[in-house]
Image (cartoon, rainbow, N blue to C red; front, side, top):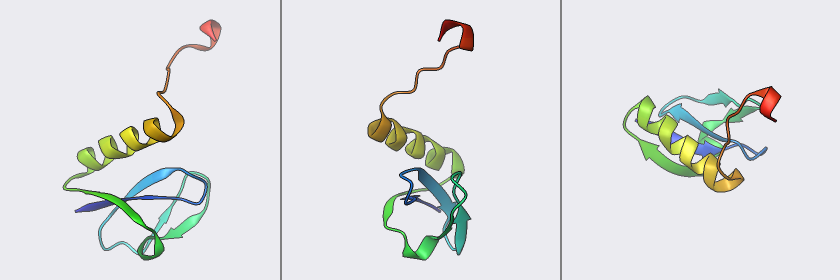
Length: 70
């Protein structure tokens, strides 16, 4: 079982249930039990997909392109 939660920086993360801490990409160490749970998933693939969807809802859709077209 995996839980989905949000860092103080706004980034959505996931962690396996039972883990005490998780490090966000911003560098902050998060105590998982102190976080508000946004969702649950059965496997890491499902958790990853949920995180991706929540990030798109918060920040809009990601547009992937090459640097020369930007």
